[in-house]
Length: 255
Picture 1: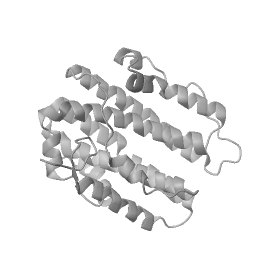
Picture 2: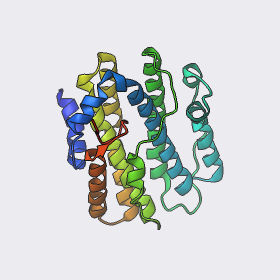
Picture 3: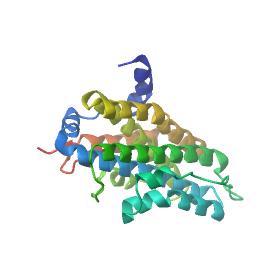
């Protein structure tokens, strides 16, 4: 493991309250689970982009900019939910064509927009890259069920603002951190093409959890460590408890 690799992982491992169990890694590198692993990973990249888009649309930008965001993600959503489009079609997309406008009176402003737009760009690029690998390996996209992981986190989000936003940002931080930790866990145990890809994702996405935490802290304007600790416990339980549905963010496989 390189020094750079270790330096990227150190803050992630300090943030998370547990490591991915070895039994999950064993299941993940089993050839029979490769198809589900890749499909679910691709869907997770889209969900990460959708979450960031939702945050921008709800809290930060005007209606016209919100429509631009919807149009940006539509081809990827069409591919997943309506089975429309192809790798070649997605490769021709250009992204946003106009600057997003922060809506008048927004409490959250440009910092939220800037961080989340960059995240969306990266997540959609990674969506494309996973699909590219799927085609190389002869894995055809099919519909699969969602894992319990994200819903298990969101179940604990408070229902009044700004606590709702703060909690969702903290959840986002944990989801991003766990993804990176799992990229690192998988990289040494898969073929070189996939391993190199996971390492590249770790380099690209390692700061995402910190961006979420910075936004949460700035919006709260006070110490959020207790709430961060609480969601860390929730997240660790989801990762270490037995789970009968193998996915990219699932718990310990029941054998």
